[in-house]
Image 1: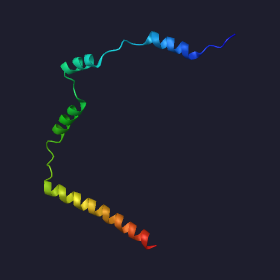
Image 2 (image 1 turned 60 degrees about the vertical axis):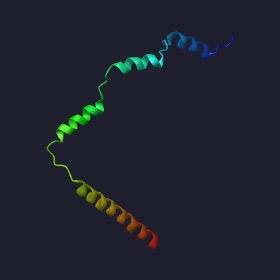
Image 3 (image 1 turned 90 degrees about the horizontal axis):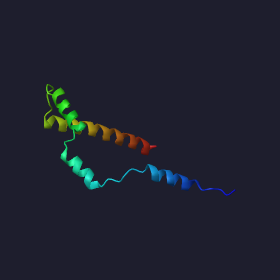
Image 4 (image 1 turned 90 degrees about the vertical axis):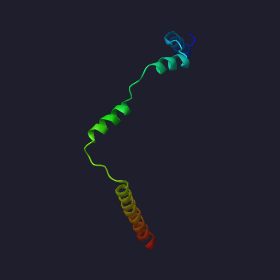
Length: 87
């Protein structure tokens, strides 16, 4: 009895189950005509409503916070490196 290749059987099944090919143009035509709701835009609008009452920081305060925070971090890194290199 001769052995049969399994790939022929699998290819035959895949050929029977294969869906008809749809062109990219047909997909873009359908999608382009209908508005699609964006979850990101919905989240942005709901966050805007939720944070309306919270006072916003000025640019000067934001810059000062960034400089102090980053400065403290890099100062800590420099001190650790100085201790490591001193040994």
